[in-house]
Length: 139
Image (cartoon, rainbow, N blue to C red; front, side):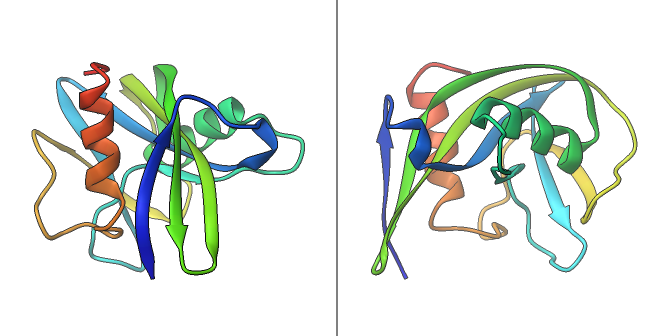
């Protein structure tokens, strides 16, 4: 059970296990739909061995949205606190100029003015991430 989502300016790099990317294209938010779900999510995923969290963010954005041309920058670090501990990830912002084909577990992407309330894959986390991106003046 998720107890809290926290935000940090930085933490030890070794703690960063994943990256999530709040992406926009043509003035709209970019969301993904996994082929096994009906809900929407922000692109992101786990860090692979030997990979920097910046590399994770770029790879996951490409894999989950088909993004080909984009700018990417870090926003902050966030954590999810559960009963069994705290896990950390990098929160990024991207502007996507062009998309190619999807070649992953993602079925389709959506460009939306605003996220659809109640249609999140991770409703305890994702709205807070977008709120923090806005709060920090990234968008």
